[in-house]
Length: 96
Image (cartoon, rainbow, N blue to C red; front, side, top):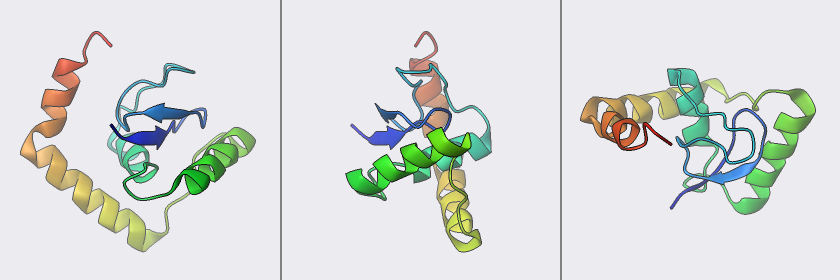
């Protein structure tokens, strides 16, 4: 399962799109989902994700993606969204 950084509190958690076991935040908007996807072990190593978490705890928000990376992540996210996979994921985890 994917390891990811919580966009809200910086805690390392399992699953980019699942609720954080520390603060219970769950990404809902497209921007929250995109940054949650980006801050995962699909793209970064453990040390980098820990640095991202530290940044969030210090600044109160996730690090900003550079414009080129944001375009890439947004395009990838839109493909996943169009496939219906997110609908299935959120339907399966409604009570979570």
